[in-house]
Structure formats: C-alpha cells, structure tokens
Length: 150
Image (cartoon, rainbow, N blue to C red; front, side, top):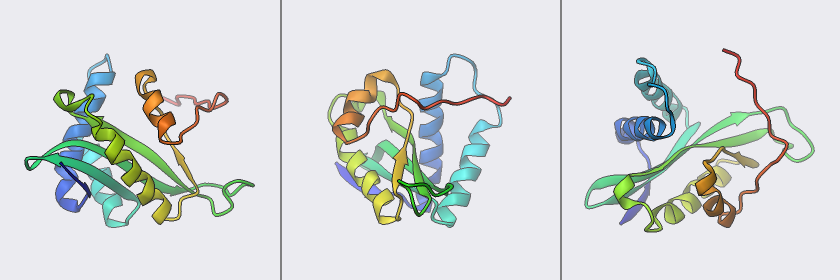
C-alpha cells in the first residue's frame, strides 16, 4: 500500500469518494448539484493550497482518502494565529475497512495541517469512528454546537 499526498490529478477521485461517503451516511437523496460543487471546491482550494489531502493506494487504486481545508478564524487565547484546519472526507472503501488503512492515512493528513501552520484541527465523526480519532489525539468536545441556516 502507498500513502501519498494528493495532487490535482486526484480531484475526480476525491470528488467520487466524498460522494460515496455522503451517500452512505445520508438517508435522503443527495442534491443534484452536489458532485459539481464538491469538484469546484476541491479544484479551487487545491490551487490556493487551502485544500490538502492524503490518499492510500493499493494496486494503483485509491482505497482511502482524507482531506483538510485550511481557513482563518478570529484569533483567541489558544489559536493566536487564527489558522484552523477542518478534516473532511475521511473515507475508506467498504472492502478495505478494518485493516488499519485510515490509521496510516490520518497521521499524514494531521502532519499536513501542522506543516501548513494550523493550530487547531477540527472535525465531526460518526460515533463508530470516535475511538480511532481518540487514538490519533482528537478529543470529543461536549460544548460544540451548530445551527442549520437553511
């Protein structure tokens, strides 16, 4: 297995894998325009180096990926620089799950966030994946909240 940083040649693969992931975790049909919007986002932000990722390949096929998006937040006492990374699209193809693939991908994507100067790495996770993330150093934040504005 090869673990490597993504390149613009991976945009279609990242888009496809994110769509597969969202299809698995969402009960409702995905919006028609979603695939093109994901592709547009990844293309735009790979170009400006605010979207970085890591893939795992086996026999020339991408079997897992994880992507971070870097953005600026208001500085505070913990994040004086205000640079934050958000982890997205942590996904392993179903037939490769349970073999430790993501345990090899996540440290590499975490290092990408560090190397980019991010002070915090945030994410949301399915309950079943929380033990893996905790082993990687993530902490569950009980006071996180969100509101849907649609």
